[in-house]
Image (cartoon, rainbow, N blue to C red; front, side, top):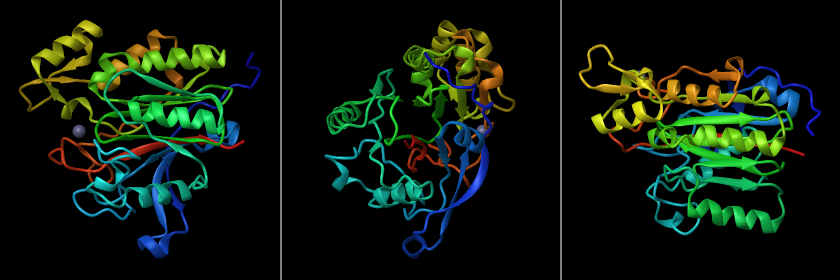
Length: 297
Ligand SMILES: [Zn+2]
């Protein structure tokens, strides 16, 4: 049974974090979004990165954390951006996680959840295999391992339970339509034996409805999976748009989440390319920001 006190309500704020690698990258800090009260209360560090302060060159400039299609292991040497490992080190160093093993799944727009319950070598090896096989959400109930989810327009979500177990999710429209967020939320609730209303939900920047026109087929899928309220016709645009945030909120509230425990930064990546990578705004050739989550023992 969980006996921990309730978590503070989620609140993301933008801060500047020194990483000590300025001699390599030319600037000694990165800007990122964190929940400081949550970190102080339960030790779970949530970091949503921005795109600046890394080493990558255009079109990946500059704190690029992944090139889709190139995995962390077998294909790393072929990756068109050679700076990803150093960028990840910059990000991790800014939060004192540079010594932790990192699990960053191969994201495949499906609804597979990767579970990690302890940081033993055997479990880590299995988690790395599972990550390579493909997963769009990770659920960690252990400390001293970091999770990294990468996005550019897709929705990055992090859930935290009062016992400090957490979930990090990559949700594109396919993941939203597959109800991946709700499935991961229910798994976290079950694993941490907490109430739905005790779980904190943090959502960083993604493509908002005004910038997310979809095909008639996709719109119909959303109307079937949710209802017509998640479809929009944006001013000045002719097609049908999907509000991914509204669909996610509908799903999570239906699962019992408390509205007050959902923190959405309310930033659209397509409209904010000075701070965030955007797949749509940058003609599909761009980098990925990340959600880095971990807890130290
Ligand atoms: Zn926008």
